[in-house]
Length: 163
Image (cartoon, rainbow, N blue to C red; front, side, top):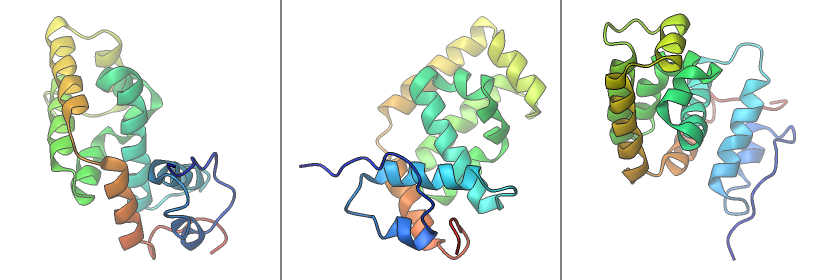
């Protein structure tokens, strides 16, 4: 029987969430970290990596890269590639870099540029993002598993709960 899904973050500390490994699905534990970090007033850069990767996963799986850029998750576009590389997902990082270049070929990743390009993309941009979506869905990197391992390795710098 597969591990159950942890329905939501319940105020656990970093170590308490990590101790749930093997009792709950890894993707649900990563989601709990995301929920906990979102409630912090000023997440650290490493904590923002968790937010960026989870935003990418959620948005691309629900509507492709255009949705990632169009929604508020686009705020993480500038750090997502670095975050993916830091957790050992170079294929997904390369796909994301290509998607960013399609939206902002000059490297200007401000929110207005991303939102307007995603809201009214040219045919070339639509095609480029569709290709990135296809590559993303064909990709075999276990992003949630690698992110969870990365959180464990950085447990002293990713702090949630009362600890």
